[in-house]
Length: 195
Image (cartoon, rainbow, N blue to C red; front, side, top):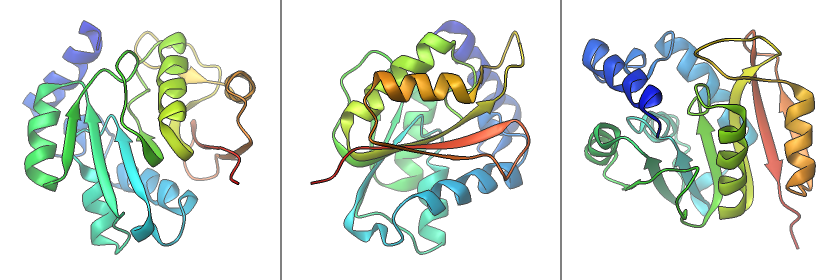
């Protein structure tokens, strides 16, 4: 993780604690809205599937899925910040891995998900992040990113065309896009061909 991203999250944790704002979400409502969309794009019965949460933060997705009776067979959280690793390990009781998703080898899981962790990465870093998660999943990778061609010093916006280019480079079998839930946000599903 670059020093900007480390400071971006560390300062939020210090200011807001273990809350949605502590992982730089605008509010708990915007965080759970994105979780709902990811859950809608995953299989209905998650009890047969393993989920790896790339950039898991405080493990909020797992706790939200559990609360909504959509607990996966296995949950693996991955984060590059020691604070996130320690907090999510304690809160979820699940396996949490301390790793840089852009650079490190990732564990295999049926589905990879990512909510918000790419919002401050550069485009090439997002491409590496997506590539590594898609390579490590058995069936698919579901992620949300900021959507559009807006230029920002802090945030990374991705266009539909850039998403489609990444999908073509990775030989994604099927792409599903959903942008009807929040302005300037898109949730993307990259699926692999299944035998």
